[in-house]
Length: 153
Image (cartoon, rainbow, N blue to C red):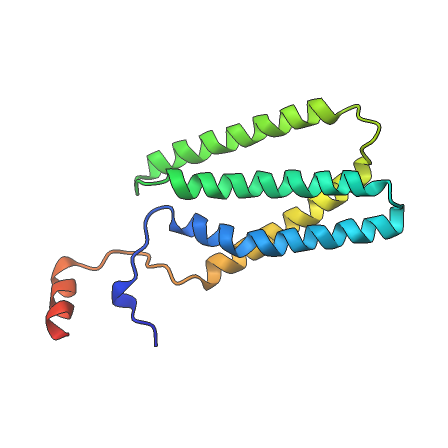
């Protein structure tokens, strides 16, 4: 049985849990998609699908990592401000990416899109699963109950 009395979680803990739970499975799903696309569409699709894998994983991982590090306050207003700033930064980075690679003839756009979609779906599913299975306390116990528990030991 898990001793829940010592479980402490900071405000950024849910994001760190979701990052750890989604990074590896989403990367594996993207790598498998690269292989499948190479077999189906030919070796020319490898670069585009690898680019889709890298951009998607970087997009989601950077957001979760930054939120896990920057959310240090339990205030909903501070959380919303930080989350919106991180999201704006991610969207601007994607805009720059698409402007730079918009006319690159060496990138298979379909392979990039398919791999990005697979990584997105895998990331969302495994991040949700990680959050649902995490044992994070959702409230602080009153100080008197915590003091009584310390005396009982």
